[in-house]
Picture 1 (cartoon, rainbow, N blue to C red):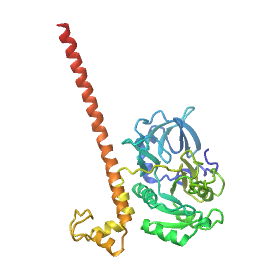
Picture 2: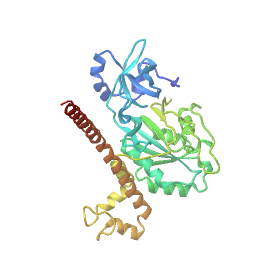
Picture 3: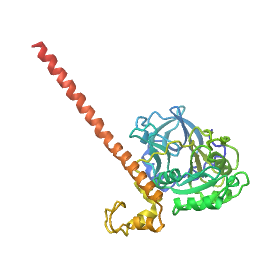
Picture 4: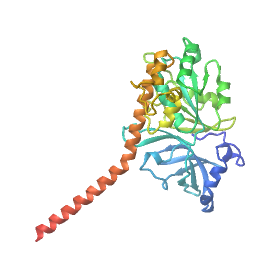
Amino acid sequence: MISSSFPSPSSALSALGWDASFDALFTEHAAAGLVPARVVRVDRGRCDVLTASGPVRAASRGLPHSDAAHTVCTGDWAALRPGPEPDLIALLPRRGAITRAGADRTSRGQVLAANVDTVVVAVSLADVLKAGRIERLLALAWDSGARPVVALTKLDLADDSAAAHAEVTGLAPGVDIVATSSATGEGLDVLAATVTGTTVLLGPSGAGKSTLANALLGQDRMDTGAVRAADGKGRHTTVHRELLVLPGGGVLIDTPGLRGIGLQGAADGVEQVFAEIHELAQGCAFRDCTHASEPGCAVQDAIASGQLSERRLAGYRKLQRESAWAAARETARPTGKRSEFHKSITRHQRATRRFFDQQQ
């Protein structure tokens, strides 16, 4: 459903995140009689979009559909051909995108949201903190070029909120952390003041993303559901990525709970998440130190002194390997396609020669 709180036409585009740089990119499209539109939701080959004139339901026949990394997604800016049958003709270059490795374990990445300014990572205090998952989500956020914020949800259900806050602080250097409770309202005003521009909510099912979305929107727009007491997991109450206009300015993208959070080519994001390890590595005796058994390793010295944990280093190595492996597969995929193409030509040539040989 498209938000009914759409701003006035005169301020619509800027309220949706349009600025001078997007305006410059749109020059040729404007000359062709197209209008800018921001994608609200993608559903069955059609898109809900917002324009300066209001909401539009459009086809996307003119856009690529074969490559998941370049397929239209929520948050994209597009060129819309208006008329009785509106159609999206082209996508503007993305300022950044939240991209995870394909859930089908192929080399294709999946874009979750485009042109995002703030990523709110929802972490439930009613559940056991999972350091690895938090680090993955933060790497995903940093690598998109957006600013991460951690929202500690369900503060009213926390056993030891101070200890949890301290643990997450150690996992998220340089990231704002806001403890919130939708039940009591605590921290919600702080979170609302912290997010800017286009904000996307990330986290697993049951983390309270939809409840946070309702709090930021000031109305119950998103369905919420109970969490199973047995394992702390929730069901997917959000089934589509959807962009909604925030009453105080900016837009919000809610996403379904993420079961798999694979990283793909997110080396910069991993480095940001583990900034203290990168900083320590500057003091290693060897520039190519692997932080394993080399003499003069500042990282291993930090572990020996208790400044850094073994788990933190292991998490760093794991995400580095995973990101590099997925990126290598993505790079190799076009080469593999070309190889198969050439092989098919060779097979055809051989079959043709055999045919003519048999006719002689």
